[in-house]
Image (tube, rainbow, N blue to C red; front, side, top):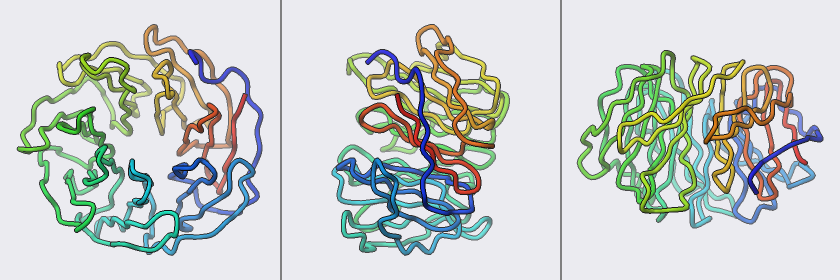
Length: 305
C-alpha cells in the first residue's frame, strides 16, 4: 500500500469525555482501543467505538499509552506537573495492575518499549530520559543532557540506541548500554514534540526517523549518521506523528484539527483532511489503514477510506 488515505468518512464515538484525548493505542488483537485523557483510561470496542470498561488509573494526566510487543502488558504514563512522573503497568487483557512507580520528578510525556518487552524508556519534563526494567520497575540507566523537558523517546531497530527530543529544540542519540551521548541534532528552531521510526525493510540500511516540532516542520533523519535528509513545512503545528505500516507515508495530526499525509521521499503533501474541531492531539493507525483521531472536548473520530 503506497498511499495511506485518499478520502475519508467520519464517525464520532458515543463516549462522553470532556478533556482532550491525549493518548490512543489499539489492543494487540485489534478488536478494541484504549484511550487516555485527564478523565482516565477507557477501553472501547473497535470499530464501533462503544464503551467497554475503564482502567482504574491514578494518573491525573495521561500523556502516553503503549502495549508491550508481546501483547501482555499495557503501559500508561503521565503524572503531576513538578511533582512526579508515573508509570503504570497493567496486565492484558484482564486489566489487573502489575506495578505503579514514580521514577521521575515531573510528568512523563512519552514512553517506548524494547522489542523483547523487557525494558521501557521514559521521557520526562524533569529533563531526564530513563530505561526501566519492565518486571521490577528498577531504573537501569538515566540519560542526562537535555537542557529543558524531554517530550519524545524512541528505540532504534535493535534496541541498542535511543533517540530523544524535547523543548530544547534538539534530538539526541544515546547508547543504551553506556548512557553516552552519540549525536546531537539541532536543525529544529522550536520545541520538538514527537518522533517516529520508519519501519525497516532493509536492516542493513541506516534507520530513518521523522520528527515534528512547533516550528511547523516535519524533518527526516538518519540519526546514526548525524544527517538530516529532508524536511517538509506544514501549515499548522503538528501534534502527533506516525509512519504508515509499509513506511511509504508519514502521517501527522495538527493543531488545526487536520490530518496530513506526506511522501517521505519527495516531502510532497499527499493529503490534508480536517478531522476534528480544534487541536488533533493524538491518533493511531488501524490494521486496515484507517485512523482514529483524538481531539479537544473528548472528540474521538474515525477517518477511513
